[in-house]
Amino acid sequence: MYFHDKRLQYPVRVETPDPLFARQLQQAIGGVEGEIRVCLQYFFQAWGNRSPNPKYRDMLLHTATEEIGHIEMLATAVALNLEQAPLTLQESAAAASPVVNAVMGGERPRHVVEGMLQQHLLSSGLAAMPVNSDGIPFDCSHIYASGNVAGDMFANVTAEATGRTLAVRLYNAAKDPGMKDMLSFLIARDTMHQQQWLAAIEELGGPAALPIPNSFDQSLEKQEFSYVYMGTNVNGEVPPEGRFTSGPSLDGKAQFSVIQSTPLGQAPNLGPAREGSGAQAEQIGKV
Image (tube, rainbow, N blue to C red):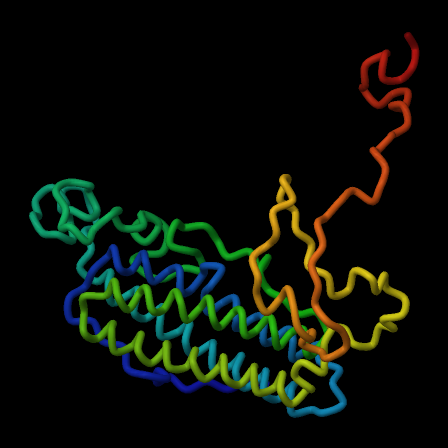
């Protein structure tokens, strides 16, 4: 069960509306790095959580609900940045501001690289949508909820890392002080969320929880390949040295080593094409 408060989680202010920046903010809503992605990811991880300790389900639910508030903040920011966007071609032609130039593709300020997202004008009535900065709808293909609590926590660290990277880029692109302030809050929350997922991984055993899933009997895998870095340079050039090529494995079960990858299998030899498959007669064996 969920409740709502009509007040925003953090203040959203726009002093100088910018429809181009509204378009850029759409990436933080419906992009693969955006808030819809992490919100749904955490919800589905929580709803399917089978951990014997209910605190992980609760933690996921708290954070997923927080992310709804982030979507609301960003949607509000998009709408506020569109408040002075021109509504007609006549209005655009009569105006001579950077906002209109961004729409019409005329002379633009240096920071304007593309016009406003036309769907904001044509489809949403100058409001945010569940799309990315190019107007492509969010399709949930980047939501990861595996049912493995440790694996999901690693996926969440990645989600927050890419989300924070996007928020930093938006902060650097922002000209409006209110937008910078809002983004500084979202960046701070991304910092915390990275830390909390890493802390959960530590509670779950950290490196000792590897490999994921740790419930599989490793004697059943080809263990001679379990901790070997395979070089694939055609001339056999030695791979770069790193923590991943020598020394103890992170789970403490073996030592890293390096080999040159060589073919271990045969050349594929498929059977003839079947009758009625639309292949050539030579493929079917009729000639």
